[in-house]
Structures are given as C-alpha cells and as structure tokens.
Image (cartoon, rainbow, N blue to C red; front, side, top):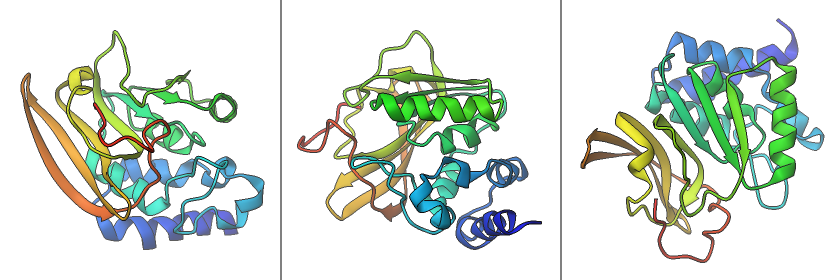
Length: 218
C-alpha cells in the first residue's frame, strides 16, 4: 500500500467509520475512487484532511467526514437512481456512481462540470450523467429518483421540490443559515407523507442563488 492509499484508508478509518456503519460496498467505493485526483493541485497535500477544499471562489468540496456521514445516512442501493445537486469536483459523483444504478448530477458552474466529466470519463465511470444548470429554485425532470443529494446548504426547506422523489426515496440536505445548520434525511413515506430526521449539526456554504433569500422552495 503506497502513501496515498494509506492516507485514503486513514481518512476512512479515522474520519468516516466512527460516525456510522458504512456498508462494505460504500467503504470500497471510498477506498477505490482516488479523492486526490479530484482535488485542485494547490491542495493535493490536503486531499484527505478534515476540511472543505476550495474549488473556486464560490464552491468547496465537502469534507471526507460529511461525505461519509451522507453516504451512511442514505444507504444507497445498487438498483437506485440518484439526483445530485452540485457536482463540484465530481468526487462524490464518482463514489455514488459506484453504489447506484445511475446518477444525474447538476452543476451551475460550466467549468466545474466539464472538469468533473473529464475525470469521470478517465475513470471509466459510465453511469453518471452531468448537466449544467441552476437548481437553486428546483429542477424539472421526466425521471423520478430514489435518492437526492444536496451538496450545499439551503436556508429553509418548504417542500415543493419533492415531487421528483419516488415513494421510499430519501433526500440528504443541510438546512439553516449562519452557524446554525442541521443535516437532515427526508424520506417519502407515501404520496403525501414525509418523514424528516435530523442527523447532526454542521456548516456548509449556501447554495449559489440562495445566499440572500430567506426560504428555499425545495
């Protein structure tokens, strides 16, 4: 095992596993997708640090700990279809692609999306569809999803975006403003019934387009 592989394994063992019971498949996906490959050159040495790594002046990678807790909460199955809001570096997209049937990932920044697509192609990940667009006010799709991952914080969840989720499907989202934010898992119990579980307190940057708004019609 080389130094990079050791660092990757140490990140899983020390930052991710203590928070939950990640499945064998999820552990393997985190171990086998090279996180450092998605990190900007200036931050390569921090690829496995417990920090959010800047991708540009508006977007950061989630920390390994948040990525692990997110995957643990969602418990994505091989037959499930995933929607990711915020492609970012493409790392979480790549990991999730190893866990699900297919993933559609939306990114507002064209350059980030193109860079992520190039990396996914180079890793021969062919079940990820990357789209460029502003999902801050919702997303129109003819498809339904089993899992929705929101990669940045929203000020408040109101509930109008849930129509894309299958019954039994789950949404991971961080809700709140300032230093008061909570990660939540929202499950669609039936057509008109939802269950919301607060997972942990955290902080993420607010989704582009929602920085100055008081509510998010999710």
